[in-house]
Length: 176
Image (tube, rainbow, N blue to C red):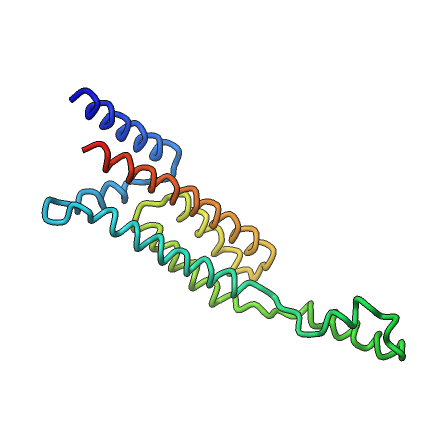
């Protein structure tokens, strides 16, 4: 019986720490309140769906922010092979013009971020939600560098909270 008490204390302490460090907010408590005897795995199921959906959204955001270069790199890597220097200059100018174009659909990226913010909010992943809110500002400003920076931050916060929630789930299962 003493071991069960220690495990329950460990669960409470870890959960308290997650709230104190801002990983979780009160929405997680609300989610827990929806769990009952008829569906004892409710929280685990909802959080698992959040994890799956999040992976897809993060991938969609990353793909939407990637800028591909359609001109062959060989033209720029091996200029000696080009017979006509003016030909090379022409392609270099085209490349510079192409790289300055806005090829990112910021509205689409913002839609993904908005969806991710909503799902993060629904499970109480506060730090992810907050990072998404800032990310959306960069989408609105069409700031590619800011979007890329915040994509990395959102990923980092997601994987941190994912790790914490998986640990919490394991502690919870062994506690009872």
